[in-house]
Length: 122
Image (cartoon, rainbow, N blue to C red):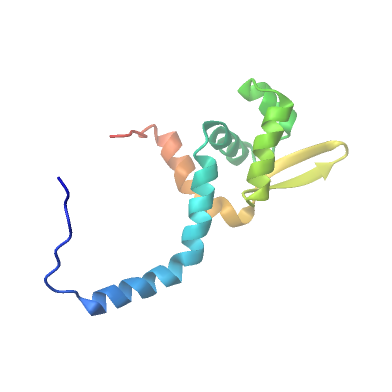
């Protein structure tokens, strides 16, 4: 059975206002979609969660915590860095990763949801 939209009257003012509203948030929607797409991967979400909790971490520590190889962790970190979600700081031979300041407002609600233990898919 195919359902179709049968509109008797188009509220042109509403449609135009909604178009303007979408234009205003277009950049934010794009950034959030990109962040959620990357954070949608279980390993990357765990990495982001740990970086938020600890402020900064090196790939070796993340490797030990998540029981993964350093190259595998590094690949995930590279994707997060390329997207601008994390930044690096080199101290001696060690590279530390942290969540970029510009993305904390996007990611904090996700971390609060994780910690609330109220995550459910219905």
